[in-house]
Length: 64
Image (tube, rainbow, N blue to C red; front, side, top):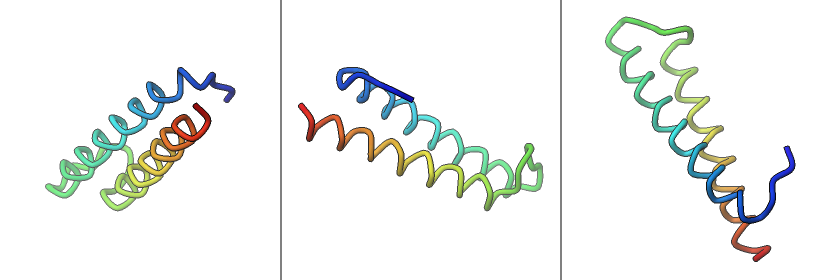
């Protein structure tokens, strides 16, 4: 994935929104209705998306 520096903050925001959605799906799964993955797997997906979002945001800030 090759992004221009000006596009990285928007990609980071999208990844962070995905992370929040993943936490929501984990909360929904904890009530007993799993959607595709178990709750702990949704939390792992959320952590990974958040880490990549922070990385992209920091990379965009340091390069500009």
